[in-house]
Image (tube, rainbow, N blue to C red; front, side, top):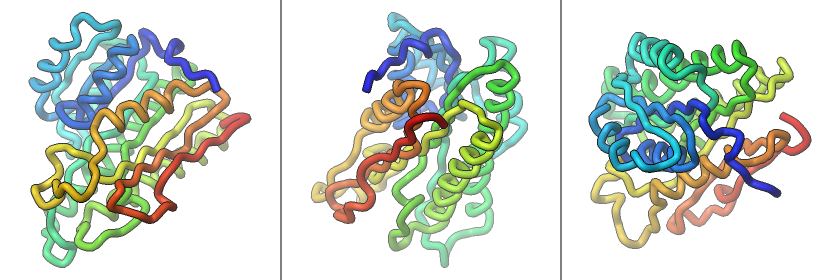
Length: 258
């Protein structure tokens, strides 16, 4: 299998939640591959710091401040991107929020915010990107950064796990809708286990459980994007060594068309 990012050079990629962790790592990798990357996050100053470090790379990184719990912020961001840099070819939905409370102790406000960011925000960004892709005949790519908790419930995962199950449902629903239109826009769902980012608390940083790095996830994004147009990577699921269930390792592909 020949892997190449060449067709994406100079194209516009949007990465949500790009201020740190997985989003920042994905942005860096895409800039290194020569893309025009627009990072969206509440802390846009952090994205600007990353952009300065990447000023000598093939691509460019730009920032736009957006709160993904607010539809008006997302709509303004995509309108600005369209006017400033042109239509979106790649969307990486990564913005996410985690409240560390059991379901039986959570607050309604936290539940609503979780779904607004982790689910509705993904759906809005996807809708706006698909509009631009279809309107400009772009065979683009939607990548949803999910979680192992979108496939397997662990104790005390609270409202976060249900929101990630919803991301899996969003990915599959979108794929079926695009298939029905015979669209060549791809959809990939990437589901990591524990990733060593600021979202982990001290208890989750125990040495007996290997952690994935943000770079691992960024490399998975580049891999999915670099496959041939006729090959779609449907999902990539990472597990940690402390999670022995083998059904959660590997990836799924679909060959011979979308």
